[in-house]
Length: 329
Image (cartoon, rainbow, N blue to C red; front, side, top):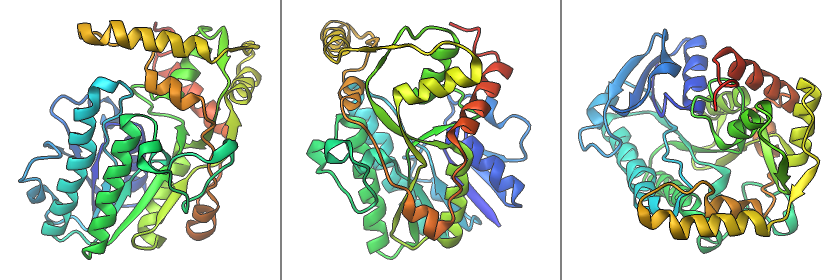
C-alpha cells in the first residue's frame, strides 16, 4: 500500500515516514524545493518536489491509497499572516481536492490542538470543545482552525478524512527545533535562568505518529482525535529535565508583564524594519493561558499509546546530543 506524506522533512512527518516504512508501506514524500532533506537521509522514500498550492499536485497522488497531510507553516510573527493563510488554509484546500481527483481512498489530516482553543480557568478540554475563532490567539491558531474547516467541508462533500490534533510532541528528529524542543535545548545549554508560569500538554512524538496510523486504520470519518498525553506546568517539565540530566532547574518564574513588554516593543520597533523580533507577541499571549487537553477519546477508540514524558525527554536529549545541537548557540 502506498502512502503520500506532506511535511515529511519536519518533526512529525519524519517520524511518521519511519513508522510507515517499518509497517510495510511504500512512501512518497512531498517537500518544498527549499526544504532540507536531512531528516529523510538514507530512507527508502520517493521525494516529490512540489508546492502545496500547485494545481497539478493531484498527478503526484495517482496510485496512492492514503494521504497524510502533515505539512503546515508555523510562525507566531504577526507579519506572517498571509503566508499562514496561503500555506495552511489554501494549501489544505488544494491537496484535499487533489486527493479527491487522484482517487485517494482515505486521508488523515494533521490539525493541532491550536485549532481547538483552550478551556476556562486552565481546565483540560477534549474534542467537543471549540473556542470561537476570534478568541484563538494569533494568526497561526486561526489558520489551523480554518484549515481544519477545509477538511470538515471536504468530509461533508463525501471525502473519507480523519482529523488528528497533536498537542506538544517531544522526541527525536526535531530538526528545526520546535518551540518545545527549543525549551529543552536552552535548558541543556544552561540558557534558562527563569521560566514562564504556563502549562502545556506533552506527548512522545512516537505516540503521535502511531496516532496517525491508528487513525487511518480505526478512526471515524469526520471525527477529530486529540493526540496528547500529560498536562504539565513548564516548571514540572523543567524539573523532569533536571532529574534526567543533573542540571539545576530554574527556580524563578518571570512576571508576565516582562515578556509581554519585551515582545510588544520588539514588534513595534523591529517588525516595521523588516527584522525578526526576538520574542513573538502572540507566543507570549498564548503562554498566559495553560493549554491543557484530554486525549481519552484517542486512547479509548484508537488505542493511542501513552509513553511516559520522562522517556520522551530522554529520547529528545539523546537525539539533540547525538546530532550536535547542545554545543550550538
